[in-house]
Amino acid sequence: APAGGVGDGKLTFKPVPPNTLDSFIVPNGYDHSVVIRWGDEVVPGAPTFKLHKQTARAQAQQFGYNNDFVGVLPLGRNRSLLVVNHEYTDENLMFPGFTDVDSLSVEQLKVAMAAHGMSVVELERVQGTGEWRPVKSGKRQYNRRVTASKTKFELTGPAAGSDWLKTAADPKGRTAIGTLNNCAGGVTPWGTVLSGEENFNQYFVGGDGAPEELKPKLARYGINTTDRYPGGNRKWDRADERFDLTQHPHEAHRFGWVVEIDPYDPESRPRKHTALGRFKHEGANVIVAKSGHVVAYMGDDERFDYLYKFVSEKKFKKGNSWRNREHNLTLLESGTLYVAKLNYTSADEIDGSGELPSDGAFNGRGRWIKLVSGTRSYVEGMTADEVLTFTRLAADQVGATKMDRPEDVEASLHTGKVYVALTNNSRRGVDSNPKADEANPRNANRHGHVLELVEKHGDNSAEKFTWSLPIVAGDPADPSTYFAGYDKTKVSPISCPDNLAFDATGNLWISTDGNGLGSNDGLFATPIEGPERGHLKQFLTVPTGAETCGPFITGDNRSVFVAVQHPGEVSGASVENPASNWPDGDYAKPGVVVTWRLDGGPIGS
Ligand code: FEO
Ligand code: CA
Ligand code: CA
Ligand code: CA
Image 1: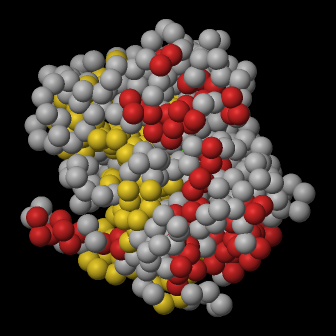
Image 2: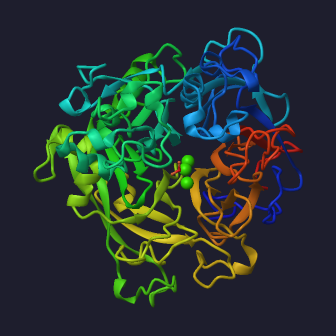
Image 3: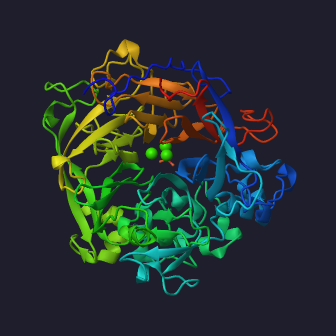
C-alpha cells in the first residue's frame, strides 16, 4: 500500500523511554489532562467527595473506582459521551485507617459495591484542541452510574429464564442485580457499549455449602468450594446475603456475561446477553461481517482458557433511523457461539524457548468450533442453557486451544483482521500444565504476545481462519521476542499486552498491565501493515503501581483517552502511606486521562 494507506501510517512521535516515575508521561509535543477521577461528580448534584466520610449514597452518584474500559461516543459538535468501566476496588487505598476486610463497616462494603460498575459522563471539547472535560453545568441528562449493588439488568438470549439463572430474589431468572468486575469492552456500530464481567468469582462466599452437583461447575469458574471464606475474598455477604452461595447457589451464574448499555438512553435498562456465553469475559468487540451479520470477538482471561466469537442470527441494518437502531439493539440476543481451535504447521519444532520455527513465523490455520446456535447445542450431553451458562465446560469438551490468557480481542475495522492480546502465562509448560505450542510459543511466558487472525475470504462470520504472531513481547534484546521481523534495535520494550485499539489510520495501539520488565505500564503504537509493521513505540507511561487501560482514540485522530487504573497499588501502601501521589499530589486516585498534540495535529505523528 502507498504511504498513508490503511494501518501502515508512519508513527513519527519520539517514544517515551521506560521509566519508574510517579507521573503520567507523554511524548514531546503532546499535553495531557485528567478528565475525571475517583469521587468526581457524575450524577448532577452529587455530593462533594469526602475521603473521611464516604457513603454508598454519595459514591453511587460519583465516579467509581478502578476505571478500565473507556469509550467515547459522539454527541453532536464538540460534545461526546464518556463511558467507563469500574472494574474493582482497592479498599486499602480507599479507606483511611484500613487494616483488613473484616474491619470494614457494612457501609464501607456498600461504598465499595457502589464504586464498582460503570459511569456515563457528558464531555465537551476545549475549543480548538484535542482536550476534553466533563460538562459542568446544565441538565447533563445522559450522566449516569451503574453499580454492583443497585442497577437492574435484563438477562436476554436462550439461557434467560432457565433454571440455572433463577434465584430467590428473581424466581423468573430474567433480572439480575448489579454488574461485577467490568474489565474491557467495546463500542458497537449501533452506538452502545459492551462491557465484560471478568473475575466475578472473588465476590462470592459459601461455595463450600453449595449443592454437591453444582460444585464442579462453580470450581471451573474459580469459585472455592471447600472454604467458606477463601483468601482474598471481599466478604460482601456481610452487606448482601445474595453473595453467599450456601444460601443462594445460583447467584454466581448471574455474572460472567457480556453487558450491553445504551448510553444515549439514560432510562434504558442495561442487558446481559446470555447468547455470548459465560466465562471471565475480558470484553467484547463487534464488527459487521461482509454478510451483514455482526460478529463479537471475546477472550476468557484465565491461564489456559479460550478465544471465542459470536455471530448474530440477524443482520445489521445500516442508517440511523429509530427503527434500524431498535433492530440493531437486538442483534446480540440470538446467534451462534464458537470457540477457537488453532492448528500448527510445525508444532514439533517448538521447544518453548520462543525461537522461531524453521518456516520463519509462528503461524498456522484454525477453525471456529460451534458450541451452540440459537437454542441448539452442539456439545454432547449439554443443553443450550448449560453450554451458555457453563461455556468453559463446553469448550473443554470440544478440545478448544488453551491460550495464554486472552484479554482484549478486537478486529480492525479497516482490514477485518482480528488481534488478540495474550497477556502472559507464567504457568505455561510448568509442572503438568500444557507446554508451549506454536500459538503460545514460550514456556513460563512472562511477557505475553499478540496474535493476528485472518478470517477466510475476509469474512468475519467464516468458520476457518489463518493466524500468526506479529509480536512476541519482552525486552527486544531478549532473543525470544519478535516484532514482525522489524529491526529490534528500533522498537520499545513491551510486556503484558492487555487492551487494544486502532487509530483512524488503522495503526494498532496496545496498553499493558503488569510490566514484567520492572518499569511502569504504558501505551504503545505500531503500524500493522506495510514496511513499518512491528515498529512498536511507547507513546505514554502511567504512574507507579498503575496499569494502562482503555485505550480509545477519537475518530478525528486528535485525542487519545486512557484509564489509569489502580495507581499506587503496591504491597503495603495505604491512604496515609501512598505509593503514588497521582494525580493530585495527595493520595492516589484512579482516573481517565486525555492526551493530545499541542499543535492540534493528528496523534502518532
Ligand atoms: Fe481485568 Fe483481564 O484484565
Ligand atoms: Ca484487562
Ligand atoms: Ca479495545
Ligand atoms: Ca490484565
